[in-house]
Amino acid sequence: MRWWPALLGLWACGVTGASGREAPPPDDAPWTMVVLPDTQIYTSLYPEIWTAQSHWIATHAAELGIRLVVQVGDVTDGNTPIEWQRAQTGFAEIEAVTSLVVVPGNHDYDVRQQRVSGLTAAWPVAHVAGLPTFGGLFEADRTDNHYQRLEIAGQSWLVLGLEWGPRPAVLTWAADVLDREPADHVIVATHAYLYNDGQRYDWARWMEHQRWNPHAYPTAIWPEVSDGEEIWQRVVTGHGHVDLVVSGHVAVDGVGRATSMAADGHPVHEVLQDYQGNPHGGDGYLRLFTFHGNRIEVRTFSPWLDRFSPDRKDGFALPWQP
Image (cartoon, rainbow, N blue to C red; front, side):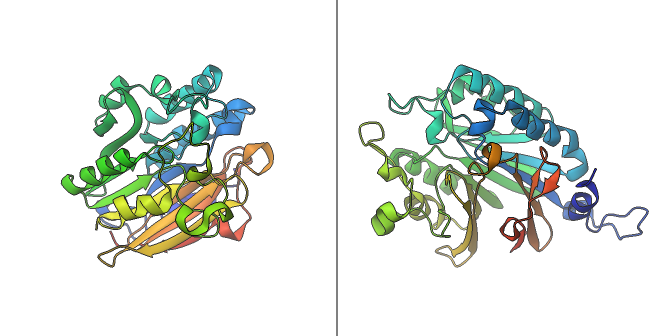
């Protein structure tokens, strides 16, 4: 297959084999996190693309060192039972081989009610609480906000999943989690955080100049929300072990990234990926974050098209200190 040589080379840099490359110590082996951008059009109109993504992850997790998959919200387009059923099938396939974190996007809620989503039915509390990586929940009866703990390459990782436009109480909970939970590294996943201009969503500064800010949604439905800047100020910048924030939500030209300095001076990489504006709701593109000793190699690959993205914005490296 066309993708294999390049992708295997990306993951296996330094692995001993027929090529004679020198093998690193086990703890230095590269590993990969897959980020699934908004899947809403797949679960609603093109379930075969969603199936291609989940099956590809399940099939190649071992070869590519996939230790974590993060879905950044808008799992569904209309929060309907059939969409969640399709999503649940893919979740199960992924979780059979690796860890999964899912957060709800605005499309995953019943727009007639406040914070009512089908996520918990599709990804139940009993299931999530039973995972060996389970850390905790914001609400005992919902999986919308949770965290997991993983051991990867000899280090401890905490992955914090936050709802779309988190309520202020959620941010208080998230900050408390990071205050009390030791970890070498923290990844924060939420739906609306970074805009495609490389700036965090910031209603106080940009207002309607950044489309789809959580604060721009009808207040009768969303009376309490927070945007990217508020997440940064209340959760991210004051915690020295937060290294990476991933998000989606930006429906047009939904690619962007930034590196911001936290209060203690360490860099935090912020990465946006959302391909729903492309044909077929995104053509199946997903993001591969491969962690090496001194960098994170980011590539964008479509199992549906069987190719890497030709857009130069979809392939880059981020400095990294393990």
